[in-house]
Image (cartoon, rainbow, N blue to C red; front, top):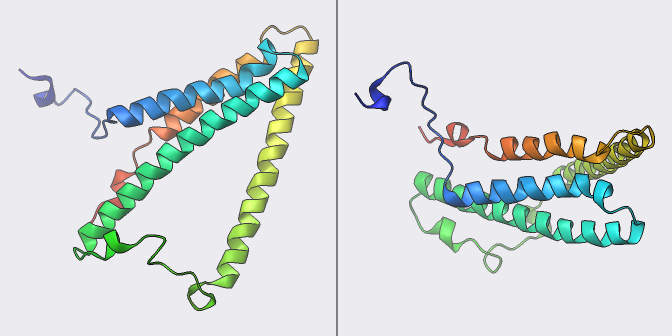
Length: 169
């Protein structure tokens, strides 16, 4: 009897493709590296350049995620509206003018963005100081111990299936 016919077998409808798996794996490793660096590179200047390289890796991961998102949105839009409008939208045909911009919404979005950046910097500083404090207390691999769950958290969040919220009825 095939396993998919057995009602006791759990089946998950979301199966990530090879690209999603590789982006998740690479992103998880880069996030782990980002937070574990202070345990392995203690010189401040070397740590700066290593983190700068890791930041480039993170930018690549987020670019890949963004490309997937844009392609999914375009596909969903064309499913709703089968005309060619979705494929004609690019930087040459979409003009941003004061008439088609919602200025209060942009102010709100930039305010939220500023708050998120400020909060992220505060959390990063807190995590680094916590790791340094624990290292001074004699804990081995203090930064690595917090890097493992953070890397796994990135991987888990990246593999969340959001397709159920985007289904067209």
